[in-house]
Length: 402
Image 1 (cartoon, rainbow, N blue to C red):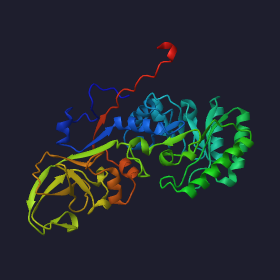
Image 2 (image 1 turned 30 degrees about the horizontal axis):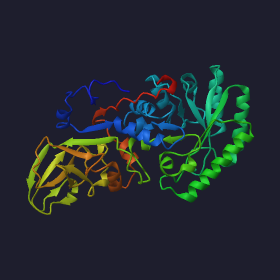
Image 3 (image 1 turned 30 degrees about the vertical axis):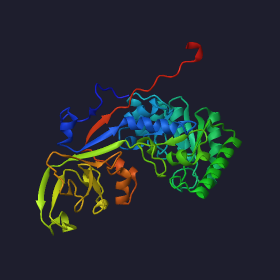
């Protein structure tokens, strides 16, 4: 876990250590590792084995912190998109089993071999690259054969799968490769689409059968992700890959037990009282309907607020939701606060995790996008506060030691 002497860490040497003072002067992204810990425990209870997916810098919240928190609370392994992300975790001292699944064919996979990172193999070219790196370093590389189960995206096309399995078996016999897993991806898990997911599962099962017929003995079969863990138990197999759920994103919309792990606040930096009919922002897309008060916040689309949410988005001011007035600009937004007694330095919740505050899901709806996109796009200018997870309870002792 991250080391800390208090309940809040501030990752910005330019600001004071007082989080209240910081919040009154700078936009702040609060990362709640306590929520990550809670979500991991909830998801681990529904999975036979949990791989915590911490790609894209842990969905924008810090890959190392999210990884360690997940491992402390029920995850057994980690997954990332790229080998560079995997190496970052290894250099930070994370030693858990780790899988990278989006490497270019023909890429130098020496770092995977050197750092003990499993790699996904969706093609013969990827297999050759893995075997070459292992032979050059006189080691064995663990691979997960990756089958396209219906996304027409990554993974081996089914028509090429038998040949890939046969090639993988030859590489095993040559001593450079060990096939430890077979993986796939569900195209329609978020909507719990029964027919599409059943077809993908059948394709995956056939793929595993082909691998075994070729003489391979993969110990790990993994197909489902967060939505599948929450609503598609038939896709669990030996392991489930969970990423969005760790940070509180439930794409099924059916499990409020998950807790949001990101909160964004911003201070009011200017207040003005205006009359009716006043145009606000570029092109005056918003005009005041009556005399009102306008509050300026110092964050905008460069910080991750989507322009497409203009005209629909709301923020929480003094416990009440109030609309954005006009377009989201690069560095600022205006809020129509009505008759609320707002003053410069007041803290506004832009994205919240509970209560009446707007959530990532709300913002995604206003913007016509996914909460994943918004979370991973939160800008570098936001000051980061990290709320650590509580210490994990010690493992229970066997009865003979009690």
